[in-house]
Length: 73
Image 1 (cartoon, one colour):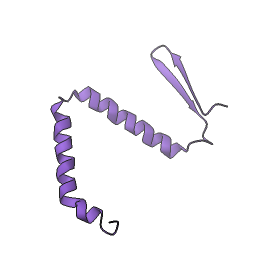
Image 2 (cartoon, one colour):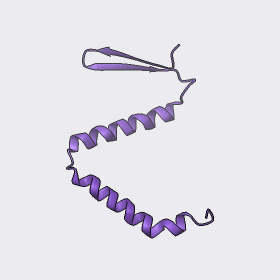
Image 3 (cartoon, rainbow, N blue to C red):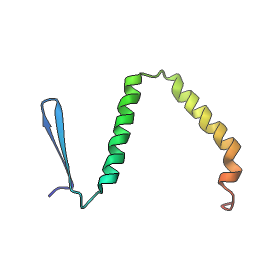
Image 4 (cartoon, helix red, strand yellow):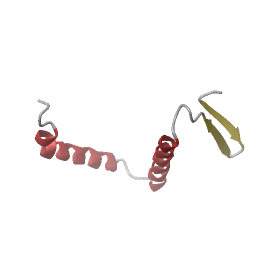
């Protein structure tokens, strides 16, 4: 059996996965991620959201860098 198989039937796709390759919890996390991606697309955020996200990450890193890297450097 192939690890993954995808078949298309009209508006639907059937995905078959060999569970000896990947466990069901990992598949659930994958489909949760796909659901989030779909919801984000549906929300139709402006490009400004990426700039805000970058700013939030930069601010977090500036505030938490020393604590995060403690014991590493």
